[in-house]
Image (cartoon, rainbow, N blue to C red):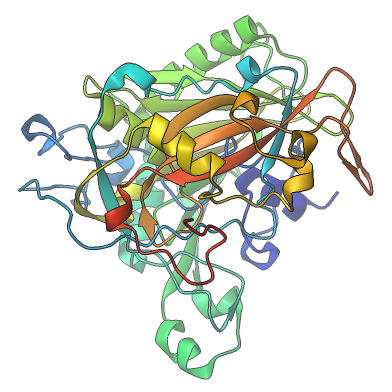
Length: 426
């Protein structure tokens, strides 16, 4: 498998032309990874001050982003404008996940059904680029100087010296069919690559996402760091080590780790390793968990191959707090067909029909897959028909297949659903 294909699976929904070639090839990530693996559209924790006065001026900025003030909010506002909730699934955005059991997919979400949350913030994704006229998506916002500063800060946090900087413009990475669109973005910066003395490469993208590729970055031999041969207890030990070792890089004040296990096509484990910044306020924790986190990837020898640092806050603007519906109301909309999903057709559901009895888990989440707004959704895990099989794809024995279905959590009167949306309210 090509190196570019590996990183496509890592970030899930980005055109192959946008991914620089990388060195050592790790184990392939499962194609069915949809939400659990890190995605490119959001980046590590910055200051987010949203929702209640105590969150208005959040001081815990990640060190590599500390010079940016994007997320400071001086006044809490009530959202009034309709929100565009159309979802981007992308070519790689499979809406199914395989696992032994739903408990293996529990991401330790800060949300719980008894949290009694009545309002959630909505952010506008300022790095959003309309795909019309562009063959392949991209996220553009930060300028060259800002991206270089982030790369240099990351190198400093790793005690590395930058030996070379390479800047790529948007038009260097995608084919733009629309001449007017090309004029609009041709001078925008797509990414900055910082090569370090030990051949570590730090790439900063236009939305502030950071990807760090290591060359032979060993971790202590007492840790078992792998995709498919690590127990839950061993994963917790590895994550404790990574949280401490890379604390200066993430800048998290109260880091919390979680590890989930999907199943691959041959029944092998496909484990993920993530860290986010927990907070006393549950709403801030949800934002950090979904939009500002770090993901660590092992190579085939159990060493550290890659780190993705995600921080949507450095390229977004607070729109306002919006009332949200309850999980019961969301479930009713789901059963009535008011949801987003990339599941091909109803035949995937048991007995060909979506049933509340097949809902295995629901979480309140923000999606970060290139949408125009960061809007809260109820993410439903629905157990699908175990007899489903397609050409080249069969469900391994002892494995369950779950579909991911999304219902916007924002109250319906604030939604602006596009004509081409996959969801239609009935």
